[in-house]
Length: 180
Image (cartoon, rainbow, N blue to C red):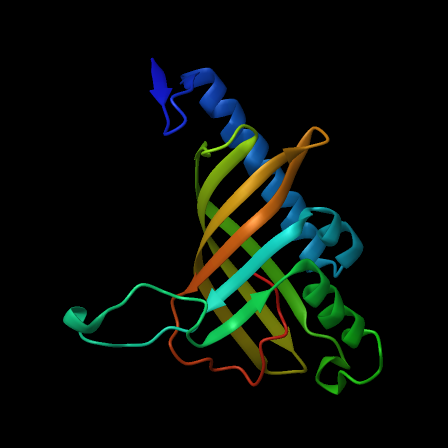
């Protein structure tokens, strides 16, 4: 059996399963880097022209729903340099909310892959669950859908675009100093 994508490239089931496996391994490595706060490794997994976007959600009637837009309110609307600035702040001594540090656990599941519109691009949809624990009794769970565009690079991938669609409309934690 073959799968046809919007690039009209045909993939066998074996090719599709191998691609799915490679993407899952990439996401496992990314999750470990984020859990360990190994930001240099994480940055190496991101494309130079990265768009990292998490729109704020709003509870509205179905008839009033509109597509997400970067011109609306966003929790994140970042590039690689702006993410690097956020991390630099963590190490500056000015991020008092991170001393003592927050403990994280990233879980990525329900991964679906398909070839992208251009050669070497992969479209991926996944769910992510991030557990945050801080101090003695502060625990938070963040659940979201992710739509990624990965690019093949150096035998692996780089995240070129990530849209994170959170399931929450109100952020219950005091900050959002976590990457999804």
